Length: 583
Image (cartoon, rainbow, N blue to C red; front, top):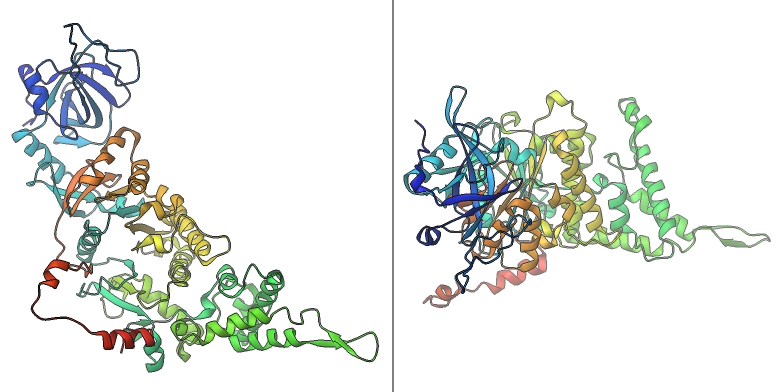
């Protein structure tokens, strides 16, 4: 049974102008004009029988001619002036078919036709809106559907996203502090956890996703100073990122001061000595194939002490002079700052996960074990658990955070790149607080620049290798524009900053640009959802996740009103001094 059985006398008005995806409707009845609202849905009759066009009201104009004459009104499509008042601009967003083959009541995100001039336009409300939203909710999608919540237009209709397109074409989740961004992320993780072969990595920068429990989740913590002392390893849920995983750009940004006049010599010699150290580690017939083809970027364990010793020797080297005496070697004194930086980094307790890995992390076999635990789906894990890996970076120093997050991202991307296509298991990288390590402004040759380069490549090429990217941030204006431009799905919570709003509006289709005007007035837990994964661009009330993250939002007034004081300065100072929460 067709759900759109409108009669002519129910019409809001008639079409007076048509553009590619925009129409202008003249509303003759002032009473009916007052009943419609911006961002509500309308139905227009198509030139094809059994077809209706669904539109979104983007502007309502009422102009009064005081002399009783028709006022000239600029065409909403940018053409010649229209001599009518009471104009409604509508953006067409899809086609509704009474029948499509064997299927009844089908909605498609395509525009096969546009309405004719003088076609009737109807408001979509009441029972018809409920029926239409039920069609949207029950629409067939590719594979299991991802339920995000309920449509704001109709609380009885469930809002589904296309899970394939959400991750294939990347997504961005943004919202000001307290808008429900972490809640929305937890809801997505909820839906993913229900799938038997779910596979995702969440970079948890502040440790707020610790409360998420269950067989679908595996919590891994980047090793802190206490973990190094205890000798904690991967099976304990502790991850080291040993220095030999660093690529050339990361090594240079970490150890070489580009402002030093000797920086080119330092970069050249540290690279040469690391290559020699890796070559020395590849002795034995079992490593012959690697020895023939490895590069500075190849993840081969090597002894950092030998590199440091060789640099120290070059820095102090003397050679025979023209007479009986000696003269300084070509690199004498040129590596002093490099050696000092390297020794300082190695001695920093906070960087124990990088420079003080346990013995097992220095074996060639360790990388395979680590990569398997990170990128293998739930069914491929030895314990059949933990398809969703939540990696806690809360104890990683902020100055090396971009380098460490990008190091993991690079390892995952490179592994999938070198995996045979038929054996790749898709994985989603969820980048919480992305503005901290995928910044819009990154200094040349800095660790930020290294991180941005890696995530730009994942954003551009990840889909080919089964890697989806979800960028999560409260400050989209501070996130790299190239990465954001590759995200074809937008889940935007409330944004109050004008710069942030402008960034998200640029991501919206031109026809839905005014949709972004809702960003500052969205309720907590409410989102604008637009993109390839959403059948209907609209407002959605995100459903409560089964397990809520620790968003660390403190109720100031309630806490100040407690009868019992809360204070733990002793342990706080101890944790500060030891640079670890693991006291």
